[in-house]
Image (cartoon, rainbow, N blue to C red; front, side):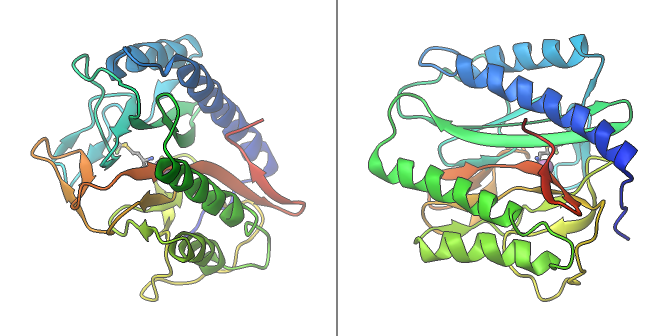
Length: 256
Ligand code: MF3
Ligand code: CO
């Protein structure tokens, strides 16, 4: 069942969304050669606690990993797709393609967002990977209108990515979000005919999160049991927003 949120609940999700936005903005300003992903983690955790919020990822149990995720951020670099773990040993260098993903719970409601940036100037292929992935999210956001269907969102991401010669990660998907980090429905970045294709209705909120590989779609999980990487070592990008369906169209909760 897809839980629809009242206008008052959407206002609460908006507050979580704007906190996530502020954190990601501040972290973006820190991303430079020489800093570590642990430096980002420290700042993010302080901002979350100072806001009276709770990190949504830290302590979150993921069955496939068999443990609770230990950090407030996922920092996934280059061939890492998602669930890369912050570390004081991971020093950013020029040309690194860094995805930063975080979530918070504020007054019982969750927000979740991610983006990918290059340290220093991206080369042409990285520039295109980031551009196409972000565009695919924006185009999917525009489908978040009453009367459209879930597959319209999924198909929009898939078509844009594939027509630009990149590939869609299939093992990790977007999700509904609200009083839990992950609610129904799953939001794959491709049309999965095994799934239901519900009509989008006012008050539904989806975390749409295209994960796009420059090379082949295949993934594997590193021995740490969390970090998902591309099998072929190609770079991967990830952008995410929480988006509400409203009578007036899409409302992106995770940006102003
Ligand atoms: N944005 C990702 C998701 O919604 C990150 C989750 S990290 C986890 O699944 F630790 F919470 F799993
Ligand atoms: Co998410």
